[in-house]
Length: 110
Length: 115
Image (tube, rainbow over all chains, first blue to last red; front, side, top):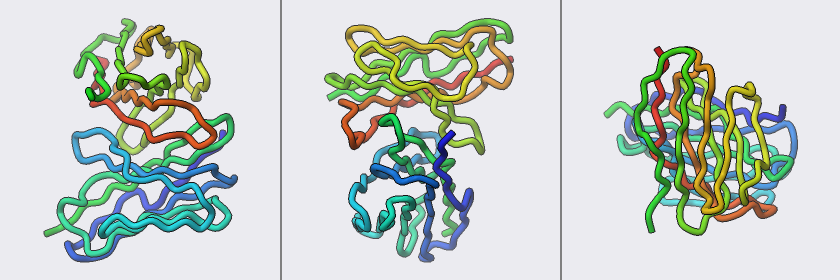
């Protein structure tokens, strides 16, 4: 079935380094959502992008939606230990459904 | 406003048994989705209910089923449990199913262990 691919699966960075996770779909998405799951926790909604080429920022986090609405990225500038967790994208696909990517697990070394 | 509540939080079952998990969505939310989360597999979509009707279903065997009640509370059932069913089962609620899906609010999950 239709899938939303997310890379990388894991990313280990030194505190202060930047981090980016990418989400790709073979078909056009109606929207993209991003979630963060802290270790031992549950996914928590971060943001939603709807428009082609949309860019949104939340402090050190920058979210982008591609022009073709088939890809998206989440970029964290100057990571901190509080950024540790798994970041999931979820794309709106056919039948009004949301499909989650496999997630990118971020670890940050102090 | 209370969040999404899932019960029980932890469960240990034996192979071959069946299990029922419960999810109470945020008040006013009519859409409830269920996900299975295992290490390395991300969030695998099980099914979604809206207004007591199953709207979408993922690629899981018929042993996995669910239902939604008139108060939007939902249950999922797994029959004839297998070892591979051990996972964190997450429920997520949202207010509706518009053209652009609204954000989902997740519960804490039920950790199911099959032995």
